[in-house]
Image 1 (cartoon, rainbow, N blue to C red):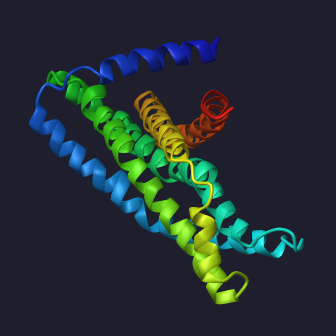
Image 2 (image 1 turned 90 degrees about the vertical axis):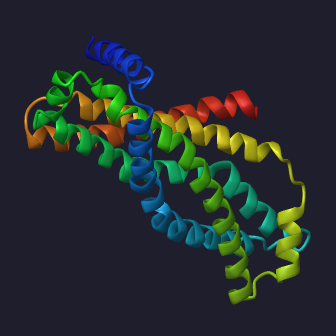
Length: 246
């Protein structure tokens, strides 16, 4: 029953959040701040993880191709497919759920326990719309850019690893990247990214908004936001893969 009650609260909160902003200028200013906080500040961790993961994928694929009948260009092909189809949209989203999700939940949760949200209500401002909608919008817009950035860096990291280790010639790796390319894989990855971005920002906003108590509860709800977002990302990853690829 508690889960059903929380789902109802979540739906009602999202209904309030997606109302038209009272002042477009205020919304745009808050949106720019969230672009910086939720998007630009995540570039570093996304870059580091993507480069090294692409390198690991390429090296492991090359080391395990001991059959002389298999072409080495499969290393480039496998790295490209794994980065585009699964690693960049899903694993990076899980990492962002930990970094961005906890930040959203703790920020809004702190405002709740310090009664800043109640003050917004007194001033006639819709707190859900003012606090949550810009974060959802920023995540849905910026996360696909981060994922595309991750794809390029991951494939580039695989190429760099092949060159440094001498496992695969550069021309062969690049030929593998270009082989059997299906543009829909990019579309599929971006669809997943948008869904995951909405899950992260909306769930984290909900858990922060519904905090009751003090600082301990803020930390507890922030943890729950990360856990719930991660679980839903995995579930929707399976659902979207079944709907779009199978």
